[in-house]
Length: 97
Image (cartoon, rainbow, N blue to C red; front, top):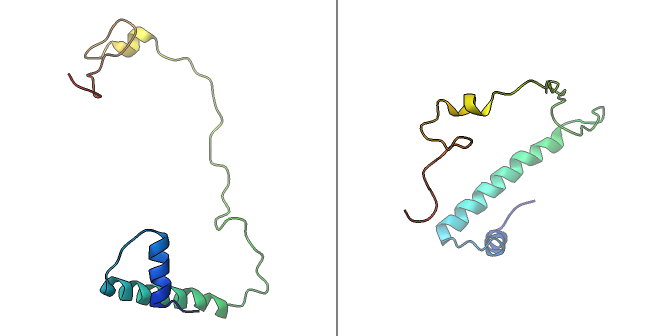
C-alpha cells in the first residue's frame, strides 16, 4: 500500500491543516517510508507466536496501602511563610491585584 499526494491532501483537510506543495511532497515521502517499514513485519513468521494483550507483561508493582498517622495542622503550618491559623495563605494568582 502506498500513499499518494492526494491522500495526504485529504488527510490534511480532515485534520484542518494547511501545507504548501513542498510539505505535501515531504509528508507523502515520509508516510510511504513508514508504511514500507511496517510492511517488513509481514515477512516475519508468527505462526507459533501467541497474541499478547499488552506488549510488556507487567506485574503489579504498587505497594499495599498502610494507614499511618498524619502530622497536625500546627506542625504543617509552622514553616509556612504566611498562614491563617488553619490554612496556608498564598498570593492571589488569578485576576487583578
